[in-house]
Length: 334
Image (cartoon, rainbow, N blue to C red; front, side, top):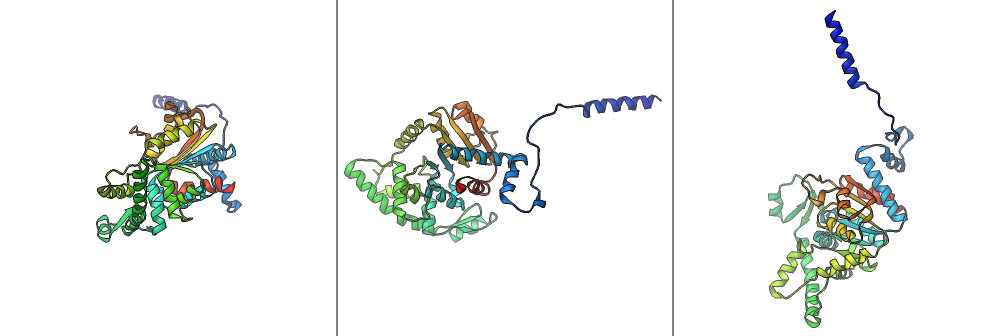
């Protein structure tokens, strides 16, 4: 009898701790797409909002980009060089060709690899390929993308005459060219409709690259300076221009794919106007190490880089999968 009473007491305790009443909450009910309705890609994307996890963050990102477009805010697009290594390069080219963004910030590879792809293709490979074997074959690996070293030889043939001309102008006039001006010249000289920066040149879209020397471009400038040690490129003028441009904008929106210097460059420029109204991050980084690269939008709010009442989201995911869908749902529909 005592054991039965003890059991009843244990049951009451367990039930009290587990099966207690909760408050009712209002909100979006969690539901996924019903394939009994057939295959409707628009509705599949709509269903992401009520799916939960990163699908919902992704859906919110699409909504925020739509608002950027509808409100005609000044849009800053930032991406890392590996995005241009991939097929996202054609997405960026589309956005530049049709004047869908106002400012681009990227890294050295994000400039040079667009130009290099006009001179020769990159080829799909394997993540698991032997680096030692590829080195013997003269092939560089970017994830599962192969880049034959001959592409960089062709790039040298393209870039050196431009550097020689700029150096002669520098000696004649004393003017040191800004990085953004240099990128415009590259876009003009490549004269190829497949190029992002050809269209940026044609449509007067400013492109900033705060780390131009961190790549093959830096190699070429290094080799060039053996014979022309007085050659210079101005980075100070670009940061002043970008900040002055940003201060004057009524509303801004930022789309950042990946992380690193281009992310901080865009955010820091928006700090000059006390923050952006809209922001979308897509990257895979966690913020435990304190790096700005991986930080969520809320950290940028603390610095005044994003407004406290902004609409912002970070999507944890691969931009090569997610960004084409965002563009299809937003920029390409308008």
